[in-house]
Image (cartoon, rainbow, N blue to C red; front, top):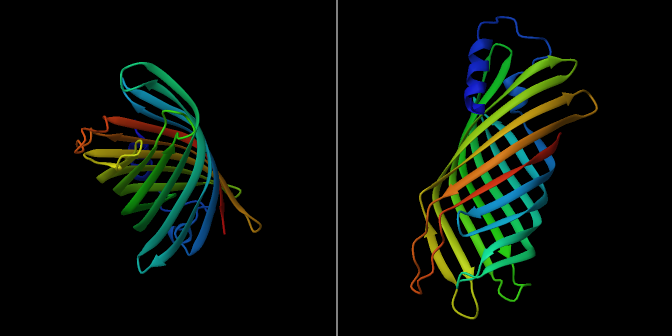
Length: 259
C-alpha cells in the first residue's frame, strides 16, 4: 500500500474520535507562519535503461517558509544539494566506458498553496502548486565528458498528516505526485552549439516518514524520504541528438529544524 493510501486510511480511522489527544497539534499550528531548515544527505541514481547510469551521494540543505492565508496557507520552498557521481555506460561507438567524480548540482524551487483539516487525532494538509527542478551534470574533467543541464517544470500534488504520540512526540506521513509540464535538456558537446531537447510526458513521486519532537526549546524532526522521476524519450535536435527515456531515484534523510 502506498504512502498516500496509508495516510488516507489513517485519517479516516481517526474521524471517529471526538476527543483527540491533548498533545495533538492543531492544523493552524502545523501551517502557521514559520521557517523550516533541513540539512540533507541522499543517495542518487540517474539511469537510461540499457544505455548508462550515474550514481553518487549528495549533500545539501532545504528551506521553506509557511504563512497562513484565510482558511489555507502559502509555502515557498527551496532545496540545494551537490554530489560526486560515477558514470557507467558506453561511448557513441558502443565501447564500454566509465567515469568517476563528475560534479552534479541539484536545485529545486516550489511555490505551494494548501488547505489544512483535522480528522480525529490526525492533523492533515493538502497542497498543490508549481515546481522547477534543475540538475547540472558536469563531466568535463574527463576527456570525453561534457556538461548537461536538465530542467523540469512540474505541478506537485501532495498530502501530509501528523499524529500526536504524547510527550511532545509526533509521527508524520507524506505522499506526493508530480506531473511534468515540460522537460528541457541542454547539452554542451564539443565546440558545437548546445543541443536542446524537449522531453514529455513524465511524472514523479515522493514519499516521506517523519518523527518529530517539540518542546519550548526546540522543534526537531528526522525524516527519511524517497523521490522518483520517470521521463519519456526526448525530441530529436537538428543534429540528430536526443535524450533516451530515463528514470531517477533519490532517497535520503532530512534533519528538520522548525522555528
